[in-house]
Image 1 (cartoon, each protein chain N blue to C red):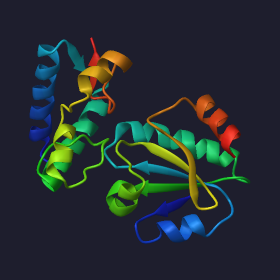
Image 2 (image 1 turned 90 degrees about the vertical axis):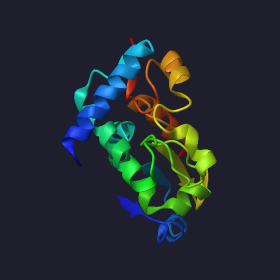
Image 3 (image 1 turned 180 degrees about the vertical axis):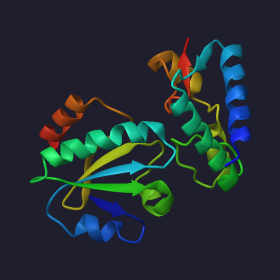
Length: 90
Length: 104
């Protein structure tokens, strides 16, 4: 997998997190692994589906699972991090 | 430890009297890699009573669909071929141990 692509996506999620009042997981290893998973899902399924959710192949059902997923805000608020651990509370 | 796929899942699950703890996981799932070693440790502790099985979602899309796996890690305890209890996400070891004690 292209390291530059991984790096760019991390930067993009970092900005998204900052703009929305939370942050990326401080553990760089965790972030990198998750981002590689997102890119692997993009290659395999055509979109960056959360690596911690099952992709069904039904577009409508899978749409909310594209990172940042439909549930990330409430999960961060409730648990201090999204289910997969990419985003954490500030 | 068993590695289950769509091909061998039912045969393995139905083919034993010993309860099977099934860990649904995927390669890139970080919480899965946190939970995995906890389950392996506990299964070693309960090895007389329990078998651990891992199901990689990519290798078992039909089984994952059948058991309505939406998020991973998902853990399901099977007894006599039937799912009797389970949980989603990472739990601390003492909580999982307590859950096993209640369900084995």
